[in-house]
Image (cartoon, rainbow, N blue to C red; front, top):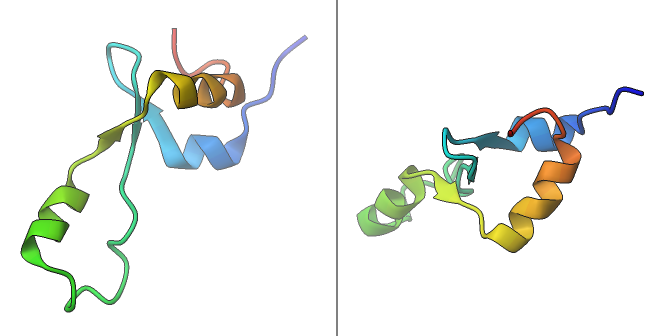
Length: 66
């Protein structure tokens, strides 16, 4: 039987070439003028999820990672 991908997870997370779960940081949509340059610099880069949390994402996306 085929397993379905949770579309909410597929929109939020991707997998790196080594199998880590990547996500984009929140806080880039609005009210940008009051946020400092150092904060925006940290938000700009993608984040990598910890192994414990990544286990839940892999269950939601059975065909995403190897």
